[in-house]
Structures are given as C-alpha cells and as structure tokens.
Image (cartoon, rainbow, N blue to C red):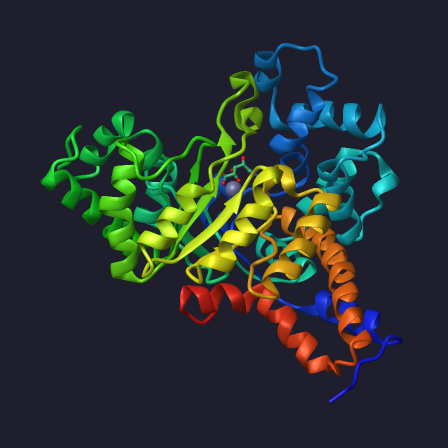
Length: 416
Ligand code: HDL
Ligand code: ZN
C-alpha cells in the first residue's frame, strides 16, 4: 500500500492516468465489419469536419468545388493550407500530428504519400488493435441511427461482431424532425401517423424497444437545439415524454441529452455546418425532477451552460454530467471545466468522451485529455495532502478508473 507524498504524487497520478483503460462513452465510430462506414487513415483524418471548417477560414474556392474533389485531393488541399502554409496550432490540427507521432511516423516527412503508404501496409485488424492500445481505450459507444439506410443494412445483414464497439440508439430523426421522418417509420413496418394518437405512441414505443434489442443499445441519445424545451406542445417534447422515457425506464437504460447544437448555420459546410447556443437548464431540472426513475446522461455545448449544469447535477442523482463536448474540447476550457466539476461534484461525473469519427481520433483525443486531467487531478490531491489526508496509490487508481470507466457502467447499471 504505497503512501503518497508531495514528491511522488505527480508521478503516481501520471502513471495511473496513462495506464487506465477508457470507456469512451460517445463516438461516431463503426466496427471494421461495417464496410465504408469504418473510417481510418490520413485522408480521413485530414478531412475531419473540424479541419474542413478551419480550411475554409483561408480558402476562397467554391464549397461545392471542394466537396466534388476526391477525399485524397481534399486532404492534400487541407494539409497544404493548414500544415504547410500555416503552422498547425489548432487543437484538431495538432491532433493529426499527435496521431502520426504516437504511430511512430516522422511528422516532419511532410508528405501524405509516405503516411498513406506506411498505414496501408498494416493489416486492418492489427491496425485497429494498435489504435485501441495506443489510445488506451477498451471500448467505445457508437452513435447508431436506424433511419440511416446504409447503417440499417449493416445491422440487418451483418450485425456487430466486435465487442469493443457498443451501441447507442440515436433519436435525432425521430425527435427533431418527426413530421418529415414518420413516413420512414412506416416503411420500417411501424403503423404510425402524423398525429401522435394512442396507436402511434404505442408503435413508436415498439420501434424503440425493437431497435434497443437489435443493437443491444447501452443507452438512447439525442442532440437538441439551444431552444429545446420540455414540457411543451411539440413533437419532440411529447414523443420524449410519451414514448422515449417510458421505454428507457422499462428496458432500464439511460437517455443521453446533448443540448445546445444549432444545426446547419452555414449549410454549405456539410458536417462542419453546425454551431452552438446557450440552452435553458430548466428543461433538465424538469426532466430529472419529474422522472426520478429515469437516468439522464447530459452534456451541453455552450460554455455558458457548464456551471449551471454542474450545480443541477448536485440536485439530481439521476443526472450524470459527461464530456467536454465538441467546441468545448480545447485544452484551456477542458482544464477549467474539469477543475470546476471536481470542485463541485467530487469524482461523480464522466469527464470526457472523444466524439471520434475516424479510428485514429481515439489516439489524439485521449492523449490530449490525459495530459490535462493529470495536471488538474494532481492539484486536487496536493490540496488533500496539505490537509494531512493520507491517500494511497490504490485509492488514486480506484478514483481514476471511476472517472474513465466505472462511473459510466455503475450509472448504466451494467458491468463493462
Ligand atoms: O451530434 C453529435 O453527436 C455531435 O458530436 C456531432 O456529431 C458533431 O458533428 C461532432 O462530431 N462533434 O464532435
Ligand atoms: Zn457526437
């Protein structure tokens, strides 16, 4: 039972943070068996929508012209603009270098053909294993949308064979655009109507139960706009209360609410088109208070929502705060938010998820985050030592495993 002091504290925390195996609770990854939906390699890394947005800070070419180019041509343009003509100092730009460095490639080769060649000679499954190992990730939760016909076919014809990839049932088309999408439900065999009558409510619940079972969903999830309001007389609010929450409770899985995204602010940018806005915490208070037997995983996109979200979590034990989502996932904000959460919630939250879309994102998102949280945690335990509290290495290991994995599985009510 190694006793910790001011001299060995940093080393112990760094070691435990470096070696903890992560449960990455929100990603857009797919298993290698899902064909073209499984994204990896330097061209996918460079055409990440974060980098496309940053590319168009400089580029004067037509949006359509850019998107008509091949992925390789887009990657070359982005690389020349963001890495060669300007130094790659942004979080997402630096992330590409982190991936190449952790893979043992020479980032100063400055030649995409070399990186393509060096990655392409590695057998895919060996490469997947290497990425998970380098990232220190034991499992990822995906974002699974049966309304996406391509993805639906993979589930119906192949299914997921890789236990490292867990499923989450994504509800955006159902909740955010029911009027446009209810016909899709009919095509899937559910006798729903435009109006939410008794039969439609029952059929939507049947759809939810069917797909939670089919993909073995660990939770249901939805992203919501800044003006999300419940209760209100809207499709979103009514389907949420009449269908989603009763089924989440019945099948005993949480609902993940990702609030504050303003979709398609500049439609020409495709996946990079979205922005953010401050949301109203009162809807979270209402849901947690009104549905005490439901569990809510919540992340919010606006920095201005972070403190009220953390305080709200102090009021409701069925609320689990997670991640520094998207535009918040930059070093200084991650440090500030994580420190605030530790001060306000102790260790009872899930500090980060990767939102990875490309397999190698797991490396950069977690290498960057581990460095930040190691520094933040060291400060907190130093204060404990100053108060004369004797903390052991085993207790630090336990706390870090809670933050990176066990808090999630204990909240979900399952083992990893
Ligand atoms: O809605 C979401 O799940 C967001 O994470 C979006 O997918 C977004 O495009 C993203 O990838 N953020 O990191
Ligand atoms: Zn996401």
